[in-house]
Image (cartoon, rainbow, N blue to C red; front, top):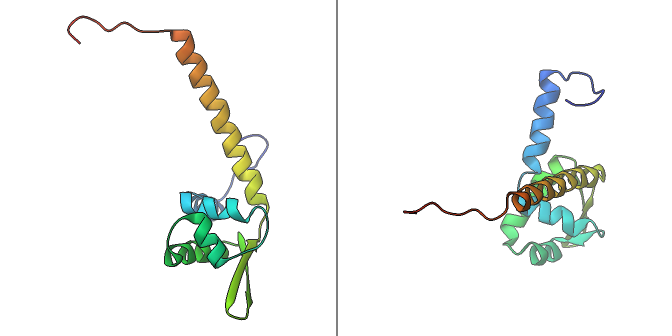
Length: 121
């Protein structure tokens, strides 16, 4: 991988790939975003995620097993919070990269100017 990071073994590469798979779902990203402000109940997360409780619970369980979330039960209610705040640094890096790429593409598009279509199109 880039910079001065030493080569990673196969088992480490598999773990890195799994982390990216966990983060590769919009619902899970929405849940992480909702939890950025602090602990929330499952019902609050269902409301913010805009999907069913069963779906939210499935995604919360995956995020918790991956070590990204903490779970706390109080009576009949379950609350989640961020368990690994470094996930936000990764998301910020990806968002920054996407923003730079989008700006570069837009700049290239503007430099190219309007294109004329050829006759018969």
